[in-house]
Image 1: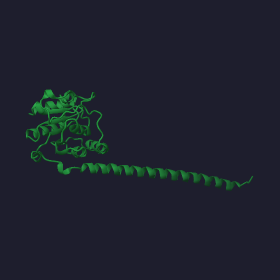
Image 2: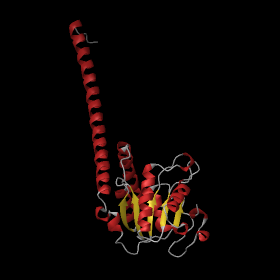
Image 3: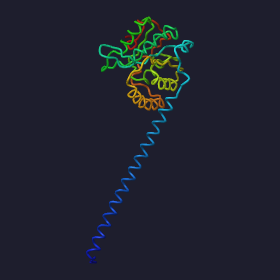
Image 4: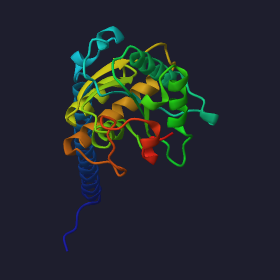
Length: 252
């Protein structure tokens, strides 16, 4: 067996330990660099989708005055938002309904389609929306509700596939409108939008962050044109009128 002087053996052990530490640091550096690259790629992809969807159909955003010049619009689609206890309508949703009712009263379209989430864990969103529209002067027979509009994508998908709409005017806030118009265009609807920004809602950062994620989700759904889980019975308000002809899902 070969023997090393005591000083040489210590130097050899120190060198080996330094070498192992160096290798570990290099591995950590490579893993960190790889993770940062992945995060940067994902971030760039998300930002690209957000920008792309946000700029879609910009020329289709109309003021109420411009919308009044449209012809042969099948319906005014008012997108829902959660209501408070007892059906209390928050300002964000109230402004959508106010603009939708005003557009109806300006004879932009013959009917209002109110789409919202009436799931078992939610208040009766569409009933509150319908009552508001009727109180705003829209005849009850011209107010249709979609109780399975659980999301923007599902609301627009069902407007075409369940209610038979082909040309729609969508009413929602300006931050939300580009995504709604993008979905409508991808699903084959001729669509326009009128923003309902009648006031400042005070939670712009939350709404912007939520919209960031929602644009990515709906971008993917639009690629596959995924059908909602709840497609329901087909019913066209282009062929039927009157509350008593409505299927259960369309009657508030």
